[in-house]
Image 1 (spheres, rainbow, N blue to C red):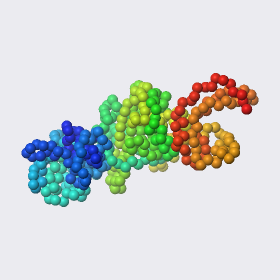
Image 2: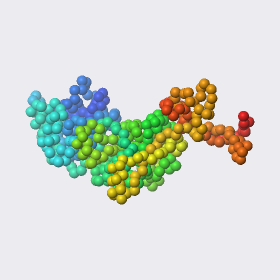
Image 3: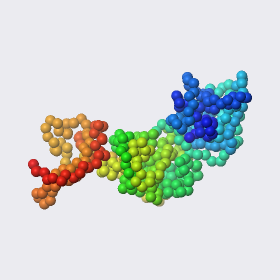
Image 4: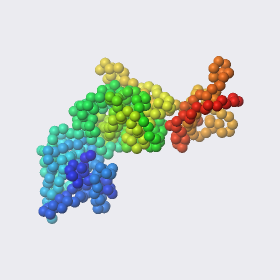
Length: 440
């Protein structure tokens, strides 16, 4: 994680337990006493309550302009220390070696454009006093002069935005380029043993886009997902890229999976770009794209996943598809993307829209029931758990036998699904009845 300066032991940052903002470390001169304070730009309204930032959901900021939309992390060759004259005392400040930057500050930092970056810093906060402005100039110049080569892709407080289905192939191509163009990647994704299979898997991934209703159902079920032993049978394809119509879990908008040896590598992604001015957004799309990694895990064969696991939403989606509760239809890809693929002599990309099946069987619901409470009169749809039906079979349908009926939804197509019935979806099919039943 990225933050302001050092913490209990560098580089772990410290945050305030009350407001979750990352704190600055101060060393009193000449006593050497260490304290933690809120950043100068933050009117906190309370005394800091310092804790390790990795023990709470800390709010990290760009270390230059304080924007929460972090994009990159930089490192300096040594800890950046400054002696600050406040006018009444001298304070030794240790800013550490890790520096987070939003996209626009990163552009100026990489240029390097010291004056442009300083102007942006001064415009972003209450730093008009000459003493403060002079300190910021010296500090920024020192960070620029001691930075190490490279930068690490990061993710901050971007508002989540779903990826449109029609542009998913372009999003996939930009993501593949981003992860393979030399950026230092979090979660060990840049290591040769992980990066190669990830890029190969993304380039050949089958693409899925989950519609609103299916996404909402996934969210409901994933939180209470019972322990599941994940096996290769759960995967709808060996390699895949799946995007939801709305964020799930911790602002996750998409996931990819790659079969890697005996395991499955899963990477979750958050969206970036929301809130940027148009020109900066265009540059971000060209240089970074739409998605950045938010987590990465390797699922071993038979690994147990429950509702608290990062891949709970993905495993839930896999299970719903596997239980034939979903149907897929092709998505009409954006025309400009299809033309770009054609010019590059690449096969036209395919995206599968995943949505809930209407109901089991071909018979209209209204014809299956009668009386005042028939399904067509309901103002909601509901889930029916898997069960066994004793029904006619064979020539002339003269014989009877038990047939399994999968979980399905019933009720008028234009009605919402009753949330309390979703617990029935993933329930196991009961044991097959052994006794015969007298047909009516």
